[in-house]
Length: 326
Length: 291
Image 1: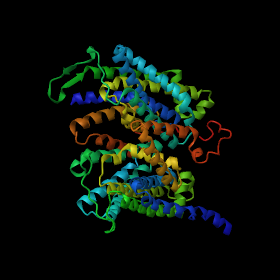
Image 2: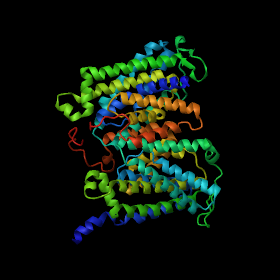
Image 3: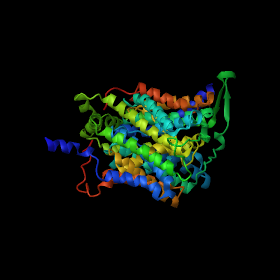
Image 4: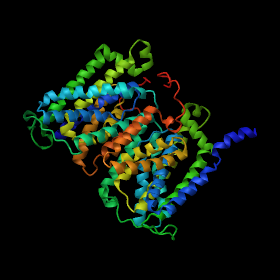
């Protein structure tokens, strides 16, 4: 009994390397102050990738429009800072709340239909918000972006500096808090039911899991986390522009997640680190044609098999017979 | 008003030709192909290059664009696409969006990022005014008239092939249930390869026809991907009349929306799609049964 309990609880235990990793991350802006800006960026996209992992990796919903919530959080936080008050933490909570509400509304749209329908509905939502942000220029600044956002100090003490150290620590702290919460949540009984729904909705329904309600809950939560990432971006850059809603952003975050590994919360973080560093290197060599290499990478990745990227020693044996996994 | 309707129909017909291949391949193999627009772009660039640099007449360019894009489709189907059919949808989305990214960047590299200008032959320029004026006046651009004629002929041809020929019935059988069709001795793979090639060819033809109307630059596959997917998602994948009606609806709604309420832009189209998909998640015109 004890051994069984241990083996079941093992994945939810905090491993030794985890605190070390976070300490390293928090030390990075201090050790390399010149790279604090990129640490900040990585923390933001990592948070975004973690939120996509919640719906793609844990709930199995393929979404091409996750940027909708990212962008909504960004615009909400930026507008809040500009029009109401410049306190970052309050703004972050408001951005998250806005994105969560939007997510709750959108979760109604993903419950029915096939993967294609979901793909189109999520994509359509991001496009609608993009159009809205573009056309409501009296509020959002249209295609010029929302300018003139001035942020107050974090917690009333730490001013944002030009080097980006405060920004990096602020984003890392938010990432850590939300990551721990997400980690706790996916290992909770509710998280387990969500995974059951992903693996087989029919059987999950048969053992009494409310499939649709679970999907709606996880979608709403993920939207809130994505909104937090967007709010961080708007707050640390003091700017929100239309590209927060763009298709590229949804595709990039999906790519990050796939690089790091789907269905594993550290996958989002790892993918974000690799992707951002790769982006920095390749766009330093060919700034214009960076998408070509990304595209090639995607094609090869899928042809070779996503699993083999992380576990290159497996699966080279005999190939599966065609049609076996239909 | 009639003019807008007319332009909308021309636009919708064009979208139908561009998207019909996608709809059939998606129905056949349940494969989400986000790179379909790349084939349309290939057709468009073939036409522009042939016309500008080699002085090939416009009418001759169209079949060449069809053949070129179709050949490319056949080659890619054999080499890259085939292993993808059994993979999960996430893999298919990643794969095809990667292909689309590559097409965009490669075209940018070879052709430059500027918009390509197409010189139409003399007899296709101009415009005929019709009717008594006021809201019922009908102004028909000759080129749009040409587009409607070509696309209508193609639609009738496709419908004939699908409904009357032996190949058509094999194709319909494979779409309805690939396993049973294979059990009956239909070579589903061959049927699919042929359909994929023809679908890509039609996209190439649509790209050639639409270069003047839609605009042609390297971002074409990503810019219009959404429109193709709307046609397929709204029209359903089990017939070609579904996508046809969806494309016409989309064309008219888009042109009318941009004309009457330019402030809202593409907002109307996306909202319309969302509402339709919420109401009928499998598409507007879908028979029961099948999968």
